[in-house]
Image 1 (cartoon, rainbow, N blue to C red):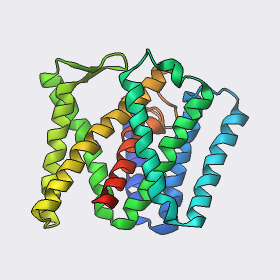
Image 2 (image 1 turned 180 degrees about the vertical axis):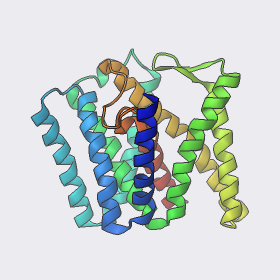
Image 3 (image 1 turned 135 degrees about the vertical axis):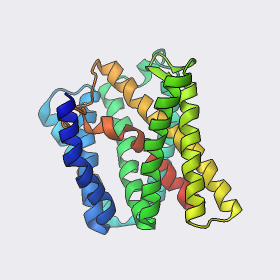
Image 4 (image 1 turned 90 degrees about the vertical axis):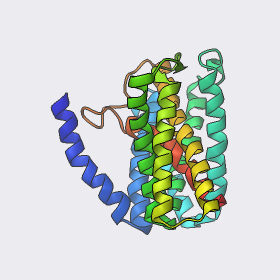
Length: 265
């Protein structure tokens, strides 16, 4: 298992970094669209669909929607980012009320709608941030990584109070606090690097706290769906690492919310 994880990482990490930071415009949209479609394929399984033909048709339908959005242009981007923010508010409600409110979303059709409201704004957010400058895309990627790393070490050292025991028993409030501290350090480093003023720095720090918390929600949300489906990983596309969704669950929440905040700020 360890050998598989290392080999997969050695192959995929350079490809992912090259795709995210070297590609622009249509090539970048195509690259991120491919990642989102792989995640969508796994989501159809999380939704409880077993027919491969049906899963393929739904995944292809999302691909067509992304193509139409790209052809139309960015006029609808802000609206879709707001849709993503609203979806994560609903997801917060369902995660915090799991399993007693499970019946509200447990049907395959509703889980598919949840997936559309998560994955499509994520793709729009990726393209919006890339168009605004590679440094802000890098910021969100570093934020998610530091939030996860800070939460891991703080949780191991100080974790006592469970965050969402019914969804993910290993996560603690102390871990979340550690992740927030780590990402605030990142925000301060960015403020110095970009020579931001006091007001801009405070705005970035507030946005950082919010997006850090949202990234945790993204992780919990996928854990909730996997627990409902009775599976450990979202897929097997990444040997030793599980599925694509397992690797981007936090990003699906952080990317559209930060893109919306970036436009607003």
